[in-house]
Length: 186
Image (tube, rainbow, N blue to C red; front, side, top):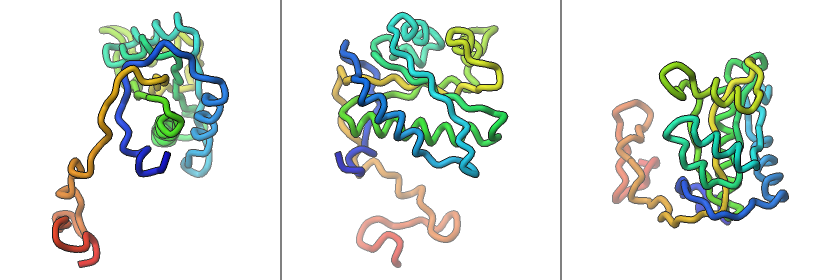
């Protein structure tokens, strides 16, 4: 799949009851490890969850991640805050690489946010996932990405969705015109 097709991906929240082959999981993780990071510190850790019982428990982390219930694969994206104070940004890039790689391989994927979210009135989503998967305290949890073969079809993003009014040339407020001229050439 060509890059500009892959980036028009949409989040898939319903998956077929079909396992993701090991070789595809390895390629997805390889893409994550190729992610750039601040000062090349690479603070990430990835917990690959294939156990359906565990995935169903992860789906209970918070309402926004219920889509995990049908996912045959979940990757928990974590960062070691002792290695880098930019772990959130570094791990976000790695998480996006995971989603783009999954799409390029014919799979669907969806990011379920965990960092700074609540499981219930008393426990953070991070603490819930940490306890469930035995993740140490210094390893922070950014998100859970559900991955699998899509059980739904969504149209890809279209060019007419691009918000050109949010592009500024040289100075904020200098809006770029789209129609009838070279966007950035004048």
